[in-house]
Image (tube, rainbow, N blue to C red):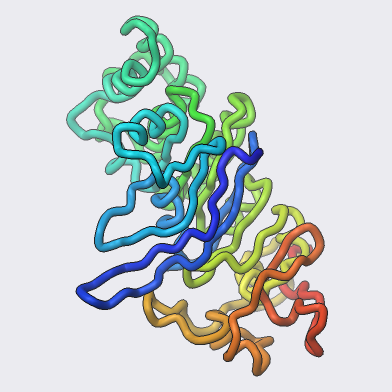
Length: 332
């Protein structure tokens, strides 16, 4: 049984009597010790998917679908039951560490209070655990840093503290929403490696939300590509980087700089993603797709099997006259 299963997740934005679909039939699963990367441009619905898993959506957003954690329906639990799961079994790492941390509480106070809330340990044991977590997260002089306030730490150190906070109760799943966005490139690589190494050691699964295919290449075991509120391709990370099937995935990979690339210009995806409520008929990507056929503008494609993954593209329809194997933009 998968650790997390999301089935036919739909999220609508209700404004007065108008309903705008934001997420449409999003389905995926995460296994034990697996890192699933969810990738796409801004506005694709990645962060909203993570918030839906955490059951943190509020009006005017309305959710439909089934979200199960170890076979238990999270979408059917009341707030009291959800509070026992958040932090203890499912934790979150958000992109803005300064907003994720309480500015008037020390790092140690925030970590120990979370530990004491969820685990039957003494305050002394909680402090020892907090210091060890900061050390594991690569923060020097961890006992001193327990007395530090968030503003006294650098951006990279704050993000490490947030990761330590997320791991403090040994959760089985972490929702990591753009955990490297606000950091320098050198620090980004360290944070990605930290998340992967800590989760491997602790047996934690991760839903890794990002727009950066480089992060996907470094950390993810499997990838779900989102466009305009829908998953358009899923496959193991190695396969999706080498042989992307959906034209949108091919476009995302074509913009990655490569050391051996002799081309003068990087690839680009023309146009922009449609906003909520303005998704075109048929395949939402067809106005921007260089390989679009007439059917793409009329009918939304289902997911077709391709290799060890699947993609929602009419070019992969085994019975279609335009069927082909997409590999443009694959990493060499």
